[in-house]
Image (cartoon, helix red, strand yellow):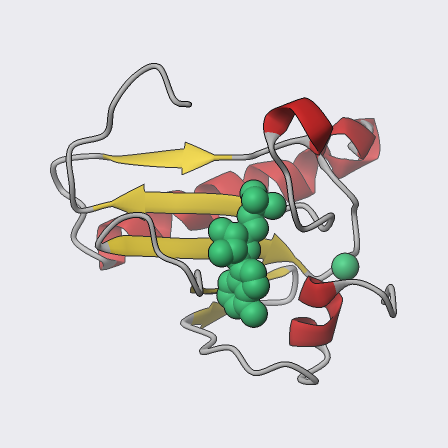
Length: 114
Ligand code: AMP
Ligand code: ZN
């Protein structure tokens, strides 16, 4: 746990979040400022600052997070498709420095993103 990290505080139960999914490696909860009808955040229980800090050892965890996103997309009936976003570091627009996947769905997405 990183005591300065918002998502570590959510993991510790110090900040409330509606855990719509939890397993031994990750949790998922709704984004507080949703950008689509479905907007979930999937975060590892391990504090990893960003994708830019991921090492070979993290590959099973990264795969698990992606698989969890796919499972949550199915359980949320995002049958027409969805988008998974991992904002990474400064140029990536990351604001919370604990790795997270955004699962966005329920509307037509645009490309390129801003
Ligand atoms: P990013 O900009 O990729 O780092 O995404 C961080 C996300 O965390 C943003 O979409 C925020 O709306 C979201 N967020 C910030 N605080 C909370 C919170 N307490 N509960 C749920 N989502 C949050
Ligand atoms: Zn953290």
